[in-house]
Length: 349
Image (cartoon, one colour):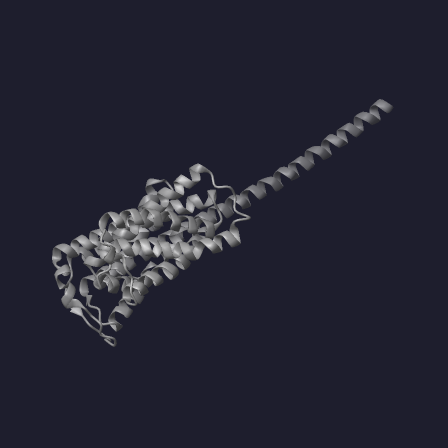
C-alpha cells in the first residue's frame, strides 16, 4: 500500500482523492457481500450505534488516511511503514487513559513497558529529526522519480510528514480501541466494515472536493493512479479491514498490533528492489520502534500469564474451600441425624 500510494502521489494524484476512491471501491465490493451474507441475521442498528460508527469512521478512516496520505507525500514509503510501529504504544497510552491497562513500575513487566515506551519515543524522534545518508541496495526495477520530488524532501517537509504520520497512528489507535468495543454492540463484521467504508466514502468526498475542485485531477487513466485506487480499495480497505475486524474480535487490538513491524520489513525490502531511496534515519527509527513494540508486548504476555496463574490459584482455593465446606456439612448432618435418632428412641421408650 505504501509503495503503490507513494508512486501514485509522485505521479500527481492528490492524497484526499485517493482516500475517497479507495473507500468508494471498497464499498462497492463489500456492500453486496454484506447484504447477501449477513443482512438476514444482522441485529437492528440503533440510531446511537449508527452515530458511533459514523464518528469511528470519521476518526479512524477519513482523518487517519488523509493524514497518512499527506505524510507519505512529504516522506517515503519506508518511513511510513516504520512510523506504523508507534501504533501499539499509542494504543497502550489510550488504554491507560481508559483504565483498560495498568503500569506497575515495580514489577519486571512494568519496567519492560516503560523501557518499550521510551524506546518508541526515541524511534519516533529518529524518524523525524535524523534522515541520514540514502541507500540503494538490490536495485532491480528503476522507476524512480527523485528529481521530480526532491524539493519535497527538505528537512522541514520531512519533519512535517513525520508529524502527520504519527498523528495518523494516533487516530488509528483510537479507531482500534473503540472499534473493539463497538463490535460488541454490533457483531456482524462484514456489515460493520461495509458500513464504515460507506460512511467514510461520503466523508472523504466532502474532504476531497473541498481540497481539489479541478475535474481533471479526479480523472483516472490506465496508469499507477488506477492501480493505487483499485489495490487500496479492494485489497487494503476491503479485504484487510475485514480481516482486522476478525482478529480484533478473536484476539484484541494488542495482538493485531504485533504484526506492524512486518509491514516495515516488507516495505523496506520492496523499496530496495524498486530503487526507492532508503535513509539511515528510517532504518534506525524502525528498528527502535520495533524493539520498543516487542518490549511492551513481552510485558503484556507476562502480565497475562500472571493473571492466568492468579485466576487458577483462586479457582483451586475456592474448590478446596467448597470441598472442606461439604465435608464439614456432611459431619454436621451425620451428628444431627444420630442425635435425632437417639431422641426418637428415648421418646418411644
